[in-house]
Image 1 (cartoon, rainbow, N blue to C red):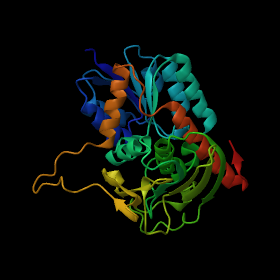
Image 2 (cartoon, rainbow, N blue to C red):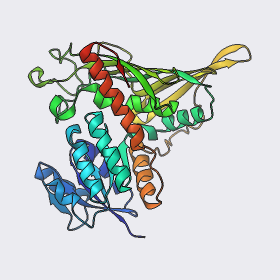
Image 3 (cartoon, helix red, strand yellow):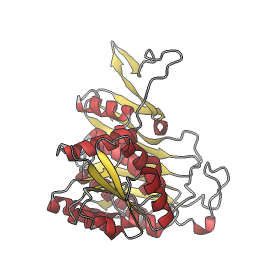
Amino acid sequence: MKKLRIGFIGCGGIANQKHFPSLAKLSDKVEMVAFCDIEEERAVQAAKQFGIEGSLVTTDYMEVVNDPSIDVIHVLTPNVSHSFITVAALEAGKHVMCEKPMAINSEEAKKMLEAAQRTGKKLTIGYQNRFRSDSLALYDACQKKELGDVYFAKAHAVRRRGVPTWGVFPDKSKQGGGPLIDIGTHALDLALWTMDNYKPTLVVGSSFQMLKDKPAGNMFGPWDPETYEVEDSAFGFIKMENGATIYLEAAWALNVLNAKEAQVTLCGTDGGAEMMGKAFLDEGYVVYNHAKQGQLVETKPSEAGAIAFFSGESQRAADVEARQWIDAILNDTEPMVKPEQAYVVTQILEAIYKSAETGKPVEL
């Protein structure tokens, strides 16, 4: 079987922590053959550690786009460049995995969606939290209507003090925003996906930059208030066409004890479900609540599978995401994360920012 040849545009943190290690485990199916970064040394190091012999190393992303031997491109750059790089790669006949969020705004995201439709090439967005075991279990329960009709959801993306202090995260011109577009996008994606509801009609939002001058206690060390340009928290109220409602909370810094990230709470006519635990360490689980035999009860996964001195082997969500993406290309099937879905996420995020800026609801 011919191996897929993959090129990477962006060799920073997300590439090294997520994409490179996951794809390295699929060496029977892929070869990592091209590495591009505006800092050449990062590309050189990535090629040495993960690339095949003779890998392309460049600071010009069009060299990767125009290489006829490359089948797949992963776009792992700041948000502002997602759209034009992705469109160029699709037009050059490549399948594209683009990191979340899809784009800096809905206009740019639409260009990506249209390019994928026009070229017939596969496009997916890096919402790896769908591939956690707790997320897949909750999605399955919703598909089987075990909660009945889900009419209310909370999408949680809240850190007490977790402002990223590296890269371009505080730079509004390159990222488009702060925690809402960075981690709020994951929580919103989970809510829309588990509810299987992608028809928003009305959005109201608020955003705050209240703690930029108070970096004490940040888990990643103090940030520089002089270069901090984005919100530290944002909140959205989303009404769907069928009347269902989603409340989204996103914060890098918020004075709250109950921090939850990339998790959702769902309320349906026959029961509810809440994601609990340390989701980002792949240690999340779902607690279901319902009525049984005249009483209110809660159920959660059993710990009976635990065996002394043997922890078993767990899979990273990123590994599952990578495998299904590569298999979708090889088997010509749809990837789990569809660009049409990611486009709706971007529309809603943009509407929250717009509502926060104008003080008015935004109709979609």
